[in-house]
Amino acid sequence: MPQARIDDSLTLYYEQDDYTDPWTSPDTILLIHGVADTSKAWFAWVPRLARRFRLVRPDLRGFGQSSVPSADYAWSLSGFGQDLKGLLDHLGLPAVHVVGQRVGGSVAMQFAHDYPDCVKSLTVIGGPASLANSALNPGAWLEQVKREGVESWARTTMDRRLGEVSPAMREWWIQEMGKAPAQVMAGIFAYVGGMDITALLPRIQAPTLVITSDRGALAAVETVREWQTRIPNSRLLVLPSTAYHLAAALPDTCADAVLSFIGELHA
Image (cartoon, rainbow, N blue to C red; front, side):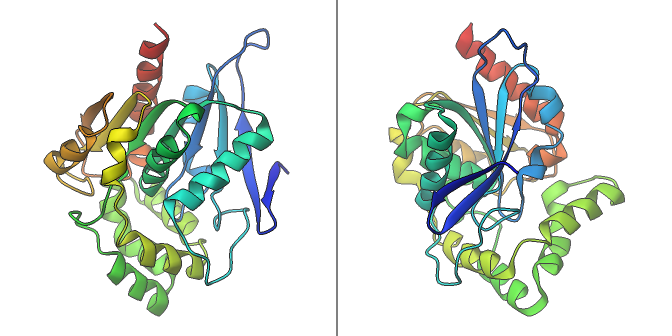
């Protein structure tokens, strides 16, 4: 089982996908999932990307097959970033393209700020710089998880997360996200309510693509554009959708946008 021992408290599980020509030296894309997801969240992306890039898909600390920290662990975007830097060091990868979705996109922005030499490009899919002006309520989510469990939270929030999808797809995501440990979710919800990395954005050096939806985003397009434009070398792609988990709801569209974006950098 592919694992990286990051420190005394953390073993990170990760998947690698590489279907590139064996005589080439492909770049690597690091795929960062969101809260309550795992490396499985990128399943639909793999066929799209792995023919041209090496993919690394970790389970973030606390999720999937990675270590679950103690209940008093101090969650932070920078902590997730340190974990990912340890994984890249373990794999001998000095620099990668970074793609993050939802809070994984927030982690990706923090990572790009903290480790600029490690990031060839940055893509943020529905990842907020802050939840202050969003329609989400992590405080209410925290209470729901404590009262009813993670699966109940996933079920009551899934319609807005995925928009109009088949009942089977909706139920699959509910079941997968419902597996996240309650203490992890409680700790993260307590943290993200006050999360704000807006001040860091002007210091992100990597070419950046931000993807949001026109109707289902965590915040209005104007709000997203306001913080996106603070990232010096960035662009905004607005997709027509009622979902905010665009990496899941529109995986082919988002993956193709990433391929096009990275391809322009190499042109």
